[in-house]
Picture 1 (tube, rainbow, N blue to C red):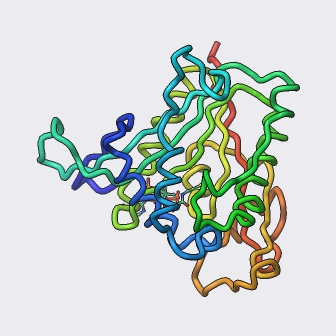
Picture 2 (cartoon, rainbow, N blue to C red; picture 1 turned 135 degrees about the vertical axis):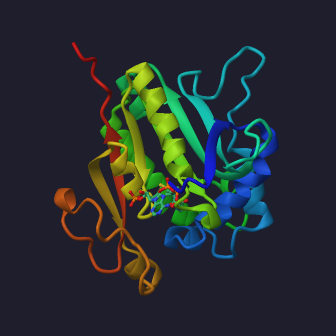
Amino acid sequence: MSSSHVIRVREATPADLEAIIDIYSLAFDENIMNQLMYPKGFTASCRKAFGSRFLPEQPAEDGKTSTGGKKQTLVCVAEYLPKGDSTDGPGEIVAFAKWGLQREPLSEEEWKNETFEATHEGWGDDCDITVVNTFICEMNRIQRDHAKGEAALYLHIIGCAPARQRSGAGSALMQWGVNLADSLGLPSRLEASPAGYGLYRKFGYEDVAVMDVKVSEIWGRTKPPGSNWGENNAIDLAGPVPPGAQRTVIMRRPQKTAIV
Ligand SMILES: CC(C)(COP(=O)(O)OP(=O)(O)OC[C@H]1O[C@@H](n2cnc3c(N)ncnc32)[C@H](O)[C@@H]1OP(=O)(O)O)[C@@H](O)C(=O)NCCC(=O)NCCS
């Protein structure tokens, strides 16, 4: 990390939501799957749907959430502060991460009953729901079938504003997450995009499975020169990525075992 600035991580508040949505739309702009999910761009309807499901769900009056209280959502932002500025005041929000904390295992019945189905209500009128189902929902199913309900800290998503990438914000958010997992003695799980894979390896996440989506065959899109479709990721586990496919890697970081 450059020494010209400080990165500060804190839990997000509703006041951060617009900044988070802006960062998301910019950070994933070059991702082929996002281009396919949002063929008209990240329009107002998509922004609204994304924002409405992003922050932690407020429990109902009886204290219950839709996941029966077993999964807690945590959202953090990373603030960028030029060195020399007071670190008391607000910084520039440059990155975010959303985690799902499940402290207890799910029963076999519970995890096998977890279903994933995208809707326009959840994703916005301009979103291509078929792509979301082929990509995000299938990725969630693969993760579910490997996790088998184990208690874990799950990374839903992380993104950094392109102009502030490689400033250490992504690492600071990952450090926050692995510290939490370690303090609770939990493993951590995620699905790695091509751009995120190297960062996750650095934090001790291991390859579990891959999902190669046949982008060229299904949607007729060819890989632009120099773009990253995950062709160098998880080769030891799964071999080369088929031509025209984009690789997502299902990853798990083992829990820290106590030193005796
Ligand atoms: C993945 C992502 C969140 C990383 O955020 P970031 O703030 O750039 O992360 P960091 O600055 O902590 O470091 C990331 C990488 O840059 C390197 N780096 C950090 N500071 C650097 C510097 N000053 N000079 C050179 N390299 C640097 C790190 O070593 C790391 O490299 P590695 O991944 O090859 O190990 C960001 O690239 C992003 O938003 N990508 C698009 C969205 C996406 O795909 N998100 C992941 C979804 S699964």
